[in-house]
Amino acid sequence: MSLFIRGMRFPHPLPALIEGLVDLRPLVADRAYAHTAQVLARASAQLIDTAPPDTPHPRPLAQAWQDWEERRRAAARDHTRSPDTDTGCAWMLYARGSETLGLFECEHDWMGLFTPLGGTDWSWGRYERPEGVTPAEWEARAATWTQELGGPAHWIPAHRGVRYAYETPPRAPSVEDIIAHAPSLQARAQASAQMRHANAAGLAAQEAGTDVMAAIWAAMCERAAIDALAARLAPTLVPLTPAVLRP
Image (cartoon, rainbow, N blue to C red):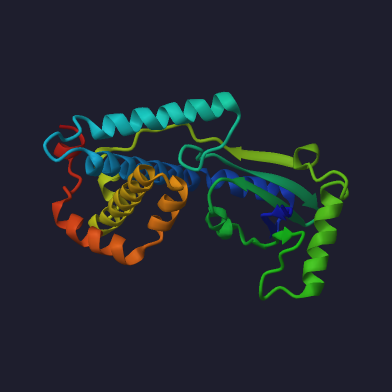
């Protein structure tokens, strides 16, 4: 696996940049809140869509929140990270006179939140050079990061620089915000159709004594069959409302 650094180059000295990062805390908190609402909406919809027609899930939102909390505690206990539950992010900052380099740590593509600070992308990969970046600039980024991180034998950001973290405590989104971030009925139908089609293929393979996982993976790529099933499922799905989420 190649090393990849998600970095930015800010036209501010370190003290001024930290002041700007402090000012952006509410924006980061809002993004974390919206992400949690989206995760809970998706999980609630899945519980509703997979319940038997004659036995709807009694408390889908409460179950989704409980599952989310359990995954968050498990990640903290096992020192792992999960995109669904990890909404914190941090910068490792490296002062360079009138400018500062920032190394972004996050489970999500949230670097765009910090464009108001005037930074430019200064990411670097050991093997990947994106289009639009010249070889000379790529080499300059490599040399800069090598110097700031203490040489190619180290590459441990925590050993150098200043860390500024946005640790966002879990905040339960309102039902209205969860509904606002709910997946569309078409997206729910597609997800449910793919799951049902894959499960059916797995059961058929098990009965036939063939490779179950191979059958499941193949079925998940059969777009025509999935689309046809999704078209039949979409009219049967129940929109997310307060009464449905908290019956």
